[in-house]
Length: 277
Ligand code: NAP
Image 1 (cartoon, protein in one colour):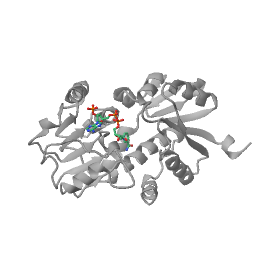
Image 2 (cartoon, rainbow, N blue to C red; image 1 turned 60 degrees about the horizontal axis):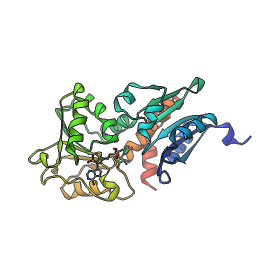
Image 3 (cartoon, rainbow, N blue to C red; image 1 turned 135 degrees about the vertical axis):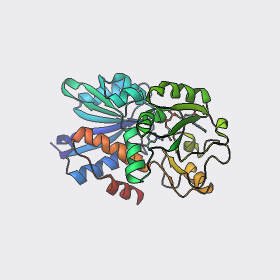
Image 4 (cartoon, rainbow, N blue to C red; image 1 turned 90 degrees about the vertical axis):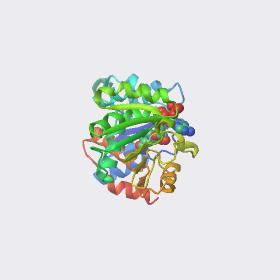
């Protein structure tokens, strides 16, 4: 029997998946904490997610991360959901329990918050927040953002109706409104979080002039080896404090690792290692 056969098996499933940093992140966590595990990236074809999870479970897999476009399907197939996954309507962490029971969790929100508040030192309480985007990522981070008691939280989206619907869905958790980008004209915010997928095409959301000023904090959920389009745009607006989502990626992975292995890894060392690549 090889070491890989003996070690507990984990993986990330998505499509595309070849550029995923999750295998490297979990390998670094495992080395750092002395955990014996293997973690691979599995490309899953559209329509093949439930079968791929069943195969992985049948092969004694212990846990899965789930990324685009399967987070909502993972939510549907989970036998039980954490409170935060239930609220988000999406699952990025599956754990195989006794009798192959699948537990679903969502660690994206806690990952963003830990990066914003703990790593970057950005306090959100009493601040005016703007969340750009109303897709899956926005859903996952809304509740944790509202728990920080911002003075205002506005969701703005290219499709305004989607932002309004999302705001209505979470309005029991705090003062929250949705609108389109043009409706932002004349508004100012302390913290602007970009949860749109515009950056994947090298674009930025079409915001009215003056929304971002030099004192704003800007955070892009997207990450890349070069500054992302939104980070570059924020810097053009004079922002000093503009960050990409690499820290969130590592923090959400650390929370998955803690769920699976019961140990919280040192994320700072792993963020530094990834930045140095
Ligand atoms: P999604 O569910 O497909 O949602 C996409 C969102 O982006 C929608 O609100 C969409 O607006 C908007 N959008 C797309 N193209 C746009 C454009 N050209 N201009 C303005 N808005 C545009 O995607 P998602 O899962 O929420 O992911 C969003 C981003 O978050 C991705 O870049 C993803 O990589 C990143 N992410 C990062 C982490 C991390 O750990 N760092 C975790 C999760 C996600 P409409 O409603 O008008 O279509």
